[in-house]
Image (cartoon, rainbow, N blue to C red; front, top):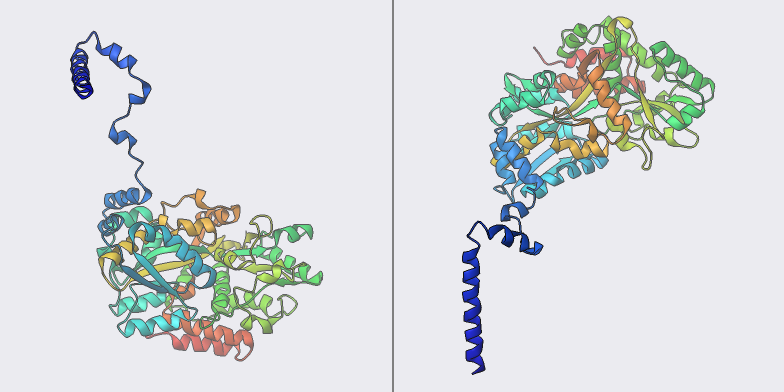
Length: 475
């Protein structure tokens, strides 16, 4: 009986609900129903409650809009579980920062980028490529070494991989020209370095009453002043495994830009101006006037060839400093002791010009990525490296400058790195690292080795310059 009454009650309630719903259709009752409905029933449409698109989805849409099909597919999960191998010179802290910079891409796409770094990279990569077992992507700090492989037809033309319109949008013409070799897009630039910088321990420097030099004469006066105070002005080291000597070549390139014309610099890079020339000899003398004066270099001339380039600046941060000035690119902060604050514990100034006729040039360098195996996941990775997002993490961590136009100055977390980027923008002239542009046999070979031998005293300047000229490949 109770069950029958319950059923009847339920049917009656349902009928009343049907009547009520019918009444809501009339204009006079609709407002009343709407205003009387409890707030909990005012649920937005389903699409309004959907969470914002995740970053990978936004990046995928961006890639599609720029015609980078494989990158868009990667963010859609099509290449999950694949591996892209890379090799290059990044080791130690640089390797850690590179891995961190690509982690977001790996997490979003499921592509595993396996980077192998080596201090003997220049010596080993040619063997692997010539032997038919290259990695998928190679990170070249020397475009000249890449150019050798382009001439052999071993490199994938990125003009068939990355839309030209996107490259023109995101790189300046200078970077595009430096990535074009033998009529193909041989590589894309992933990281830039400004090299015309002199670092110093700011807190102690200011306390000592030293002032920032604006001219070469003032720089040399500061050098003499620090030496007169009983300290070594300069921290210098050129040891770098199989690449020992590259730091010496940087100094010569700096003084070449400051003592002769850009036309002569360009001729020198291509071999049209010999190493055994008055212009190069003059540039070398500006370097050795500092390096070969034992009162000017920490440890003296004899310590230069055996001191690692990464360890060279560390005595600046001892208490008290053992040396005060170190010329090196912005990446060197990676090798500074931990816990130092940019702009407080260290800072830098622009390496002054020498001859006013040649203005305030800036020497730069960078990493150019080239592809050797053409697969969808490899295309996706190299397309990603053409975006500023690929280096954002490294820029934020310090030690890298982005060459991409879609990079933001807001990414630079300290005034030092931001000012490096500004210097690159304001340079009256910019030239790429000369040894990096020369043929590999010279720029990553005889130039490094002969200058190291000259610094160590095992050969004289005449022999060093003659040996480099003799090593130049036949034109």
